[in-house]
Length: 48
Image 1 (cartoon, one colour):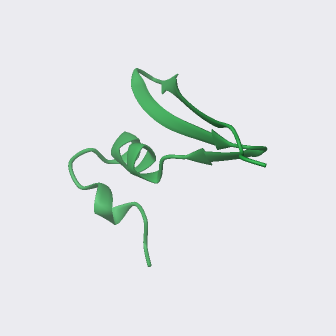
Image 2 (cartoon, one colour; image 1 turned 60 degrees about the horizontal axis):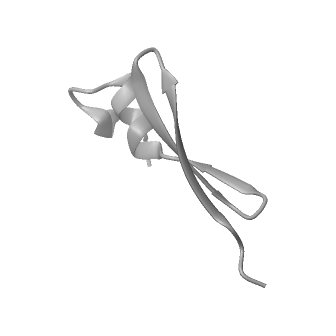
């Protein structure tokens, strides 16, 4: 059975955050979240 794919966005303080739903699982764009927290240097938000 093929799972349904739904793409949408939410607006958080005038910043678009992408959301992808595959079947019963939701995925939030980490790239959009890091840009929200630090647009000038988003690589510092997620630490390895």
